Length: 177
Image 1 (spheres, rainbow, N blue to C red):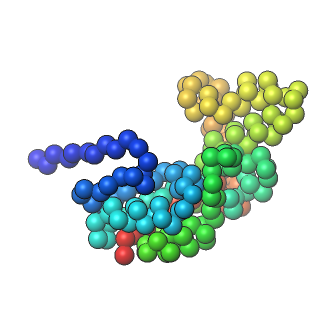
Image 2 (cartoon, helix red, strand yellow; image 1 turned 120 degrees about the horizontal axis):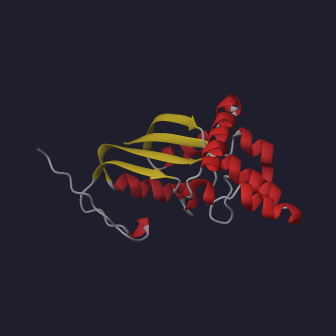
């Protein structure tokens, strides 16, 4: 029975030297942190076997949450997010990096609701303690509790109900040409 050996690299992706190409490379919420997304995707392409697949997930600025919350949208993460995408701009970057686009899908991302509400409340000095207590941006994903389970579930419902207006996350499946 086949044995799979995983490689682990600790460092900047740009410094990784491919020794053996991969059939699939998944990048979940990384491309928005990169100064040159085209070069990033080209580096992914260099690490794939011919016909290899890459799955890219990133925030979608063309979503209902952004239109609702504006500068408080949870997908900004300023200054950590350097480039924000729409499905169109992500496809454009992928094509410039010599990928064939297999599929582009919009997905829900319930934590952006919590982060957006936190940012909106936190702007008012007198609401900061309330924001940190009930919409904590780290605790909502790192501290299991009934409260955050219910809140995240409600945010997931909000994301599903508003889905016709645009979901907060893009998934693009790419094929190395």
